[in-house]
Image 1 (cartoon, rainbow, N blue to C red):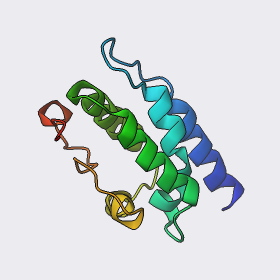
Image 2: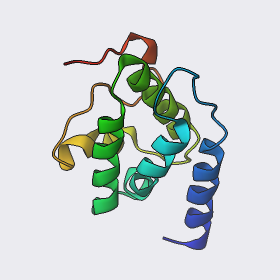
Image 3: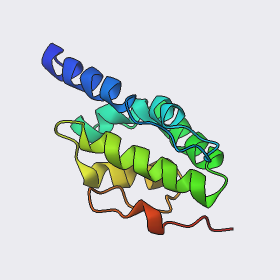
Length: 120
């Protein structure tokens, strides 16, 4: 990764910390951001999926215990992803399967996070 790309990735990561978490959720945007930051290089450049990305995906899903948590996580990911220059949404949505899990929603600028419900 070149200096320019590294700078853009770091700028995008830092900008994701500005999102304010919802009062009732037990997971925060900051937690989601920290857990999913290792996935950004794959989402932008492709290549190998970092093991830290897979563990972050699984841990963030485990922390989203309620519908409210899941909706907050979805909104954080959606808003954070929109701030990452060059992000490939197809690659982002391949990550859960590549990491041996599933996601209850598709990451997209058009995802309506308010309609997501926690499945038992």
